Amino acid sequence: MDIKRDIVEIRIPYNKIEDDNFIRRKIMSKKKNLAKKFFYRIIKRSIDARQKIIYYLLRIEVSNVPVKDEDFQYLISNYQKANPNKSVLIIGAGPAGYFAALECLQLGLIPIVLDRGKDVRARRRDLKAIQQDHKVNPHSNYCFGEGGAGTYSDGKLYTRSHKRGKIQNVLELLVAHGANRDILIEAHPHIGSNKLPAIVAKIRETIESNGGKVIFNCWITELIIEEGKILGAINYAGEKFEAAATILATGHSARDIYKLLHKNQLTIETKPFAIGVRIEHPQAMIDLAQYDQKPRSEYLPAASYKLVSHVDGKAVFSFCMCPGGLIVPAATAPGEIVVNGMSLSKRDSPFANSGVVTEISIEDLTVNGFSGPFAGMNLQMEIEQKVYSIGDGSQKAPAQRLMDFLHGKLSDSLPKSSYIPGIYSAQLSEVFPDWIYHRLKEGIKLFGEKMNSYLTNEAVIVATESRTSSPIKIPRNRETLMHDDLEAFFPCGEGAGYAGGILSAAMDGQNVAKGVSRYLERIGKSVV
Image 1 (cartoon, rainbow, N blue to C red):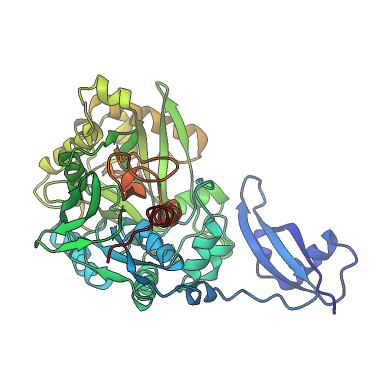
Image 2 (cartoon, one colour; image 1 turned 135 degrees about the vertical axis):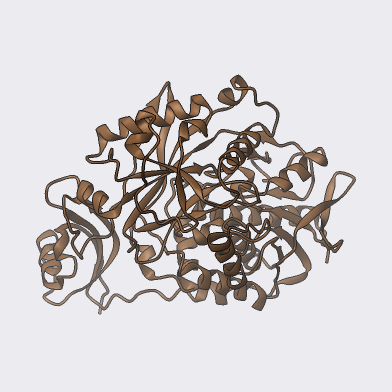
């Protein structure tokens, strides 16, 4: 039998998404001369809620033979046994570090992954400690530890960084390690912070079963540098780790690493980033605004939003929106308050939260008295520590009802919030520098013109959302991906300023591993 396959795009009312007969009829109306018996599978799915009737947009593969889901285990079974004579040191076990390690296996290199934090299972105890006991472990928290910050930040898997690599390959590797296949078809896929730990642990198993190593509780305090070349690193206990090349994939919050690079006279640069707040609405309000439904239909996911405005020529925008989500404490050191958002796989919390931040340009930093490579980091720290200082010494976060924030009024009471450490009423205009507060206030007002019911005192603003991205860039050569100041040193991922989320970090990790392989082939040397 000749196998015939074709692609069909259809639009169906949202409540028909599980109606096989209806979908078949729509396919037949688009594709003439189909055999009476045909097979199909959905390969892309998105929602169009712009009109009164909400539609699912489906991209469908149609065939005259059964269409089977591909088994991606071959991606793992094709890994070469790592060459013990070609070792690569990878500092950081987040998506950039772990996907760099997987790519090393593909290239026949042995990855040695070091992480300052704990494995995902042990890490949970430290998350509980910060949530319930207000104790911050500076090496194991919502940002540090196996899987990085993305493990406990919803697991959103969409990116605009299509140029860095093959997104599909990263998604398929995640499926091979246990992710739901839906991430391959959803327009805005996510895994959920309850599902990611098991997937991350399976990636570690793949690395170790193919000859790689993953070492936790390994905080790096020194680099081993000789004659302009990095030979490895030393941890806090004085243990040395040497390799043919080193990939630095420490994420956007490893401030001590930036200081370590500066101490070794390696070039680092301040870069634009963003800072602001978390805004939490009842999820039902967002559903009503986006779908015009209360309650939301069982055939629709928790609604989300994406908003942007401009104030004084600078962007104010929503960031890391978590429908059906939770606000969590993301501090990485005692004496600071930082918040972030996450969702579980079902996104069934009664709350919806999003970062709302304003861009911080290099010009902003200079005009307001911050200079040098640590300018942005110093602004971050100043605000985070100020937010902590006005509280009671716990991880309780200052908050304000949304309309009170806009009117400069201290809230007499606060609505319920998903933030477990607790919130207390505060005048947030006193937390931020005037220029940041002004932009946030005016930008949020403009949001109200773009989304019905957004401006409401049923929403609460929680400070502070300050870890949107790294405020520092570690420059690297565009061709070799290696730092110009240090041979065999490869900055990578969010912490180096080359990614902005799980997918882009993973793809950057893959690309940098390829850069390492090219470098090792060029020099024709190896180090155990």
